[in-house]
Image 1 (cartoon, helix red, strand yellow):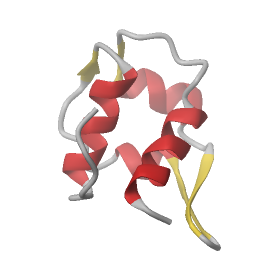
Image 2: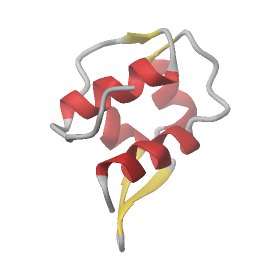
Image 3: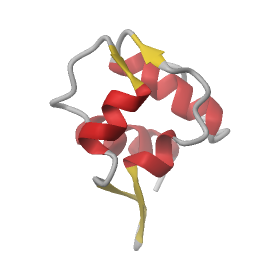
Length: 78
């Protein structure tokens, strides 16, 4: 799976999250939700957010940019 698809899958899992929000609020609501990041490989939203250092997000694009940085993925910034 390409990094852009990874970002899209994470974003899809968070469609019902209202922004602005905090990392902890997302984990409380969606932490156990699994996302397929590669064929046969899934991670939870909790695991995807764990390395993100920022605690508050104004938009889903800001959150995905932070996930991108935390995981050193190479897709264009949103």
